[in-house]
Length: 92
Image (tube, rainbow, N blue to C red; front, side, top):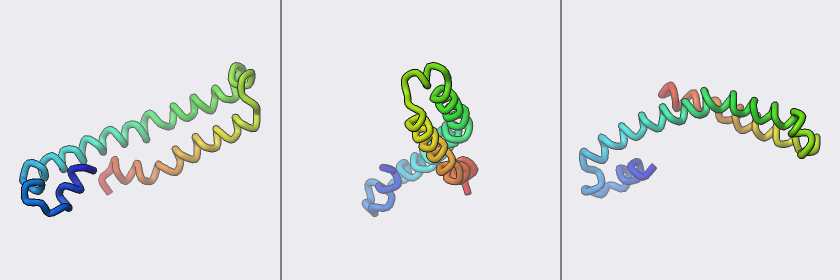
């Protein structure tokens, strides 16, 4: 975001070729990490959280209503971010 705003500022010092090159490289790195986290690690992590909320130890410490609410939030965040994650990861 910093390199993007530096380029959009129009400042001659900030819009030098190094900033442009770093902006492209940072965009690629962000795409790889965000795509990996949201598409590869996120769904199994979310399933693990939901499974543990309804597991034996989760049921001892958390009420059923809270477990359903938290599960809804986990699935909602992961499901809602999938279109953007695919867009970022695939470069659409």
